[in-house]
Length: 176
Image (cartoon, rainbow, N blue to C red; front, side, top):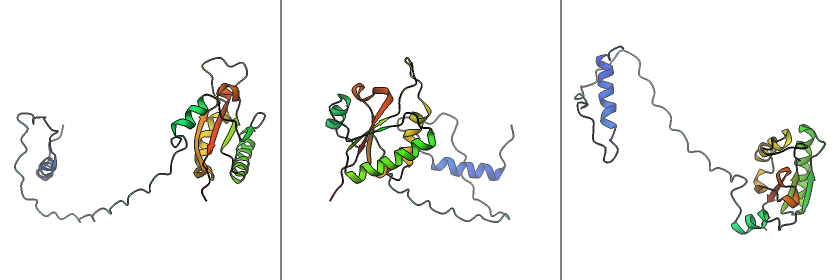
C-alpha cells in the first residue's frame, strides 16, 4: 500500500473537515484529522470550475400511477366495459406496434376512456406464465409512444376481459 504524499495529506485533511458525523455516532478514537496545512501553489495548470448542472425537467406522469381508487376497484372487479378492443393475435412485433399506435390515435380522437389490449397467453401455459414477445414489449411501446401523455394508466385485465392475456389502457379525459 502506498503512502499519501504531503499534498494528498493536506487535501485529505480538507475533505475530512467538510464531513459531519451522523447524528449520535461518535468519531472513532485515534482518527482525529491532522491540522490543515496551507496549500502551496503548484506548477500544474488549474482546472476550470465545473459548470453547474441545470435541474432536470419535471418527469412526465408515468402510466399506472394516476388513477384514483374507484377506477382501480372498478377495473379489478371487471365492472368497466372497454370502449374499444384491440386484439394483437397473429401479429409480429412490427405490425403489432404499428396497429397499437394507429388504434391509440383513433381511440383518443374518439374520446374513448378504456382500451382493451389483447396480447394473448402462450397456448397451454401454466403458472408461472412466460410472457410472449408482444406482451413483453407493450410497456416500452406505450412509454415511448407519441400518445404517452394521453395514457393515464395500464392495468392487467379482469379474467372476463382476458385476464393475464390482456391489458386495460386507461386514457386521460380530454379537457375543454
